[in-house]
Amino acid sequence: MSILVVGSVAYDTVETAREKRERQLGGSASFFSIATLGRGDVRCVGVVGDDFLQSDLDLLANHGADISGIQRMPGKSFHWSGRYHEDMIERDTLATELGVFADFQPEIPEDWKKSDYLFLANIHPALQLHVLETMTAPKLVALDTMNLWIENTPEDLAAVLAKVDVLLVNDSEARLLTGKRSLAHAAEAIRAMGPQLVIVKKGEHGALFFGRESVLSVPAIILDDVIDPTGAGDCFAGGFMRSLAESAATRDSNDGIFRKAMLDGTVTASFCPEGFNVEGLLKITDQSYNERLATLKGMMVP
Image (cartoon, rainbow, N blue to C red; front, side, top):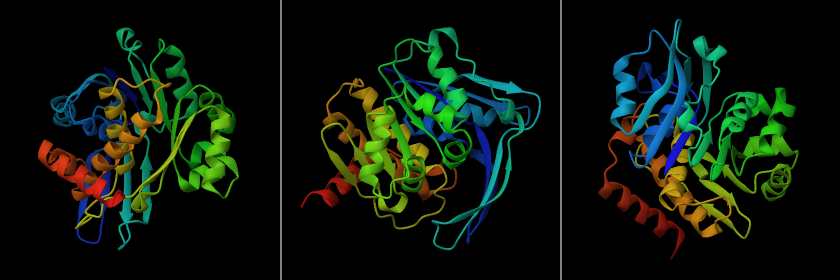
C-alpha cells in the first residue's frame, strides 16, 4: 500500500537544559516518513533550499522514503529554533525562518496521485485542499493542523476538513476549533465538519480516539529519559498511517482497525523523545518495538 505525505522537510535547532543541537534534520514530512519504519511505499513531497545536505535526503531515502517528490529550490531551507523548559514539556519558539517553504507549492508526480493513503501534514489548509483535489480516490485521508490556521484561515480550513476522514489535533486546538470545553463535545462538533474519526493528542498524557462506534484513551508510554520531544506528534501520525496501510484499512473500516493503529502510533512516537531529531527512531528494532507494544498493552489491560 502506498502512503503519500505532504509537509515540511526542514532543519531544527533545539536547545534543552543538557545540550543544544543546531540545524538537525526536522520537519513534519521527515519525522512521518522515518516513523513508517521502511514498511510500504512511502512517498514524500516537500521543498528544501540549496543549503540542504544531500546526506539528510539520503537518510530519508535509506529508511524507506521515496524522495523524488522533494523539490530543491534556490534559497534557504525552512529552519525552526526552540528552547525546551526544564520539564521538557513547555518550549519557547526562538525563530521560525520559512525560507523556500514560504512559497511552497506542492507538486504531486502524476503516478503518485493514485496513492492509497494521504497524510496532509501541518501546512496551509489551502495547500492541503489543493493536494487533496489532485488525488484519485485515496482509501483514506488524514490531516494535521494547528492554532495558526484555525485562527487565521478558518474558511480554508473548513473547506479541507469537509473532505478528509481523520483529523489529528491536540486538546487546545480541538477546543479552539470548536469552542467546546469538553473534548467529547469537541469531537462531536469536528465530526459535523467532515472528519468522521478524530484523534486528540495530549502529549505526555497520551491520545484519545473518537470513532464511529467507540472511544479509546491510550496512555503515553513512561520513558526513563526524555532528550528531545520535537516531532513526536508527526511520528505518531507516521506509525498510525503505517498501521492502517498494513491492515489495508479504508475510511469505512470498523473502529477495531483504527484502535490498533492508535497503539502503533503511540509506540512509534515513544521512541522519538529518546534522542535528538530522528535518532530515537533510528534505534527501533522489531524486538524493541514489540516489547514496547507489550508494555503499552500491559498499561491498558490488567
